[in-house]
Image (cartoon, rainbow, N blue to C red; front, side, top):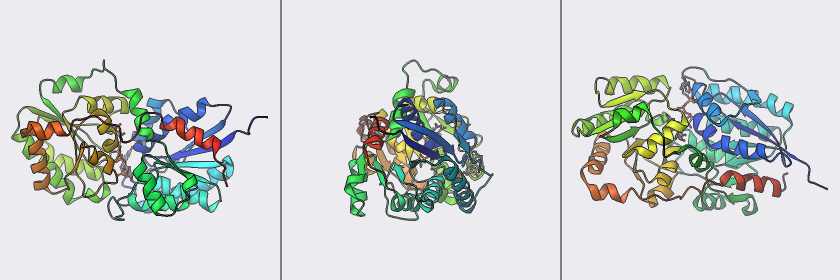
Length: 372
Ligand code: UD1
Ligand code: UDP
């Protein structure tokens, strides 16, 4: 007699969670004999989430539609918590899966915990151990791991972090990061675009920035440093797909407008963004997910943050933590443009975050592991 199907509810709400959860949604859905799958999006991001759902052809069963312009952590936490109570009561899942470190994930896990529904944490175990950096993500990921029952750690280091916190070893699995599954489907040799045409013949710099703790003075310093370095290097062009946060937009336009070799463009579809990454000379970012994707593509990343929960990419040589001061970024960026050997050292492709099969592993574990 076959095992009863597992009812799995996946919950996510922002662009990066969607990029990393949609491959898993599609793998679980393909195993019709093993899983009944529902998807709930919080809508913490609106437009940037829709872009990803469309790219992976995922249609949510529930949409909490919580986003408001300039939303606060209070808004997201309270609306997701209340919304998830209703969804979980209606859907009656055997387990809910949340991802990473967003406030959607924290509030959804809390709702499941209150209703005594098991929680699986995808991308569990990342740590800076500094609750203020990244803020509030370090709290979110630690809090989800306090509530979780099954841990899908992307790397051996993440598993070690969880075991050091006395999580039960039999429930902590190393799966790789599902973001790398996504990358395997998006980067194409024959990719072409008008933006690439514009940049042809120059060294292409790719920029993103959005972290809450960098809003304000640090973000202005970041942009000033980038502009100064690029003004000194006429053979560079930059593309900056800008986050939709109005505070980010205001700072970027204030510092970067009027400089023709740097183009601020709207958030790119994931397929476009991954292909731009694959063709860039180097990347400047404060993003988490980009730190995981870049090593697989062998693209140097200057991480404009004071801490990283992704030490594997630093050890692999692809990532360099450069802080958020204007001079620190100026020095590190200039060095990579001026010194070929410093640049070369950061271009070796490696796969510390996975081999593209994380979602399959998670599906196998979900079938084999006893739930509460
Ligand atoms: C959120 C996550 C962060 C993640 C990031 C990825 C939290 C607290 N923050 O931060 O962990 O790294 O997403 O990008 O969970 N906006 C739109 N349309 C969109 C998306 C955002 O207009 O599609 C604007 C809205 O005004 C919104 C603001 O951006 O209020 C901020 O969005 P929010 O999700 O609160 O913060 P992020 O910085 O995006
Ligand atoms: N990304 C994208 N379009 C863009 C910029 C980024 O699809 O214009 C992708 C990127 O490849 C990575 C993810 O979005 O997979 C990172 O999202 P973000 O930086 O917003 O969040 P974080 O990873 O910092 O939580």
